[in-house]
Length: 170
Image (cartoon, rainbow, N blue to C red; front, top):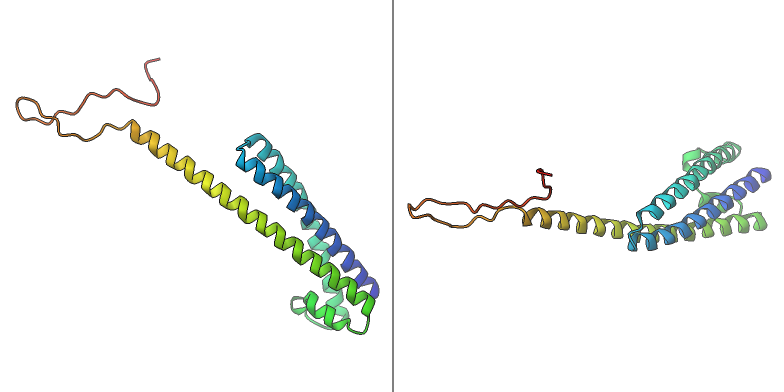
């Protein structure tokens, strides 16, 4: 079982490193969003996808190791958390300490990652709202206003506005 725990710790450490890298990338993404650099945003998004692919593989490996540990402990895989495993290892201080340390690092890294992603999400939402506002404003400028213009015969006459976004005559 010691080798399974060591393998689990190793996988968790790798996951933590990938999440730290993703956190750095998310920080760069914040700057790119603020400066509205779409080309750089595309590059960053592609880089994020590559890291997410690595995380998917690591998560698959972590699940396999966790399943093996659950089998050895005669427990259900879905019911076995890292906290439970740390508690089970109470007699093995060194291994328990390493597992607790990687758990705490991963937890803090994910907290930081989530925080930066929330900021990015809000920035993108605000950008989308601004774009929507600008489009509505521009469309409103080109619509003829409803006015009460009357001719001699008391007929409502619409102003002849030839405004449009595109000049179809060209």
